Image 1 (cartoon, rainbow, N blue to C red):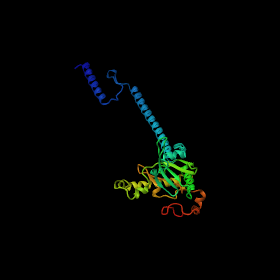
Image 2: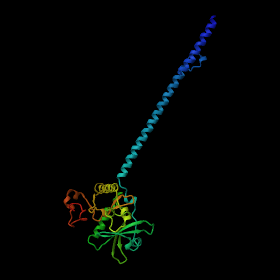
Image 3: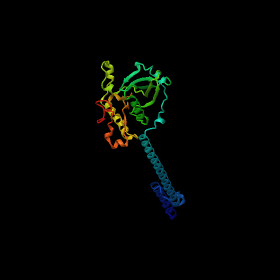
Image 4: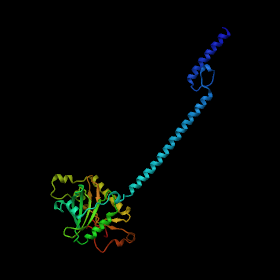
Length: 301
């Protein structure tokens, strides 16, 4: 074998070895041109660009994640703050303007068929507004009864600046004269269709069996009503600008809506707790004597 033949064989074997080695190691660079390997400088530059691209992607993703996190925390803080702040009554639910004539028509002339309840200071009627068909509850005060006018003013003052999902929503108040020129005072509320908790706990004697079965609350529904009433009282006692004591909380003053959510109503005996009263609890007992219903009035009232 000649020297030239030996060189060709060695070159061929070396080339096959490099091809096989390149297949195993894709990062080979340099070498003779016939091997078609990339130059080492280009590979380093490619690595540098790849590393820079990866760093840029990581930086951009980190920045976006930080911005999203900050905005999420800000939104969460704003949402929680908004939930704690009761909406302005005037902005959320502007008062209706109803005259005596409008209320008279809505209750069909204060018909006995529209009468849904009576109390110490007034009658409660169901009505339908002629303007838009809204179903309302109208509490007409018996102004000849002692304390009725004071109850009307107390309820107006108590409900003027309060707004809570577990309080009966007052729509408007009407103070004027009737068709006989007698003083007329009434409060108009949203109508809560399921009646009072009293009706559900103690169904009226004489109801048919089907109605009595429908007027029953299971354990969890009763527990939910207790929680609803507790939330309303916590709001009245601790979140109002001037804390309010209901003074006549009883089942007949707790109304249930279609979803069995409890709403406290009838603030005719409500009392504001000023800083002076808070410092002197004995002043809570007024010269008027008992405030509220026997068996339900707060101790010392």
